[in-house]
Image 1 (cartoon, helix red, strand yellow):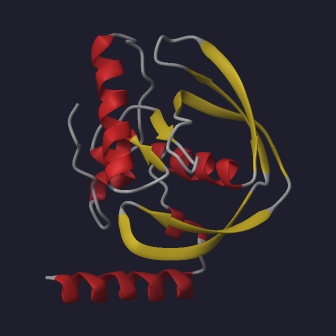
Image 2 (spheres, rainbow, N blue to C red):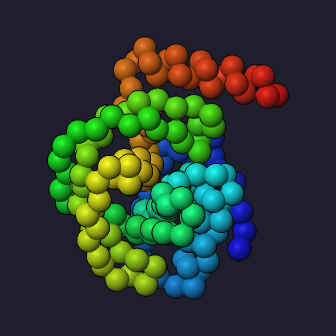
Length: 167
């Protein structure tokens, strides 16, 4: 397995729209394993392929305490969503930055696994937030896009200040 490089904002590649996965082979399985290794090492609970500069519709997530419930969604699409929740989100592409984001409380997602088998996932609460956050990455949308212009400006200034301090 190999740890991948995570793109950080304002890298323009984070705005790239991902293309569907069409080949389900050993290389895809290895890439998924590398994504999990990268996500766990970061440490994070979700990672979209776009964040590691692979513009395919693929995301991994694991919100379990012991990192033992890995979830892979390939070519995901939301079938249903309802309810509203506000959850404090962070992003591996925005290290150390968090903001309250409003998202659907419950979602039903159709996707494929690493073998190309289709399935439907019904999730709510924090996992629903995570899946929606990572799916946004696949269309070039970032969690800061859900914020007001003022909040986004303040958050991005804070990110720049953190970068200057760590340089």
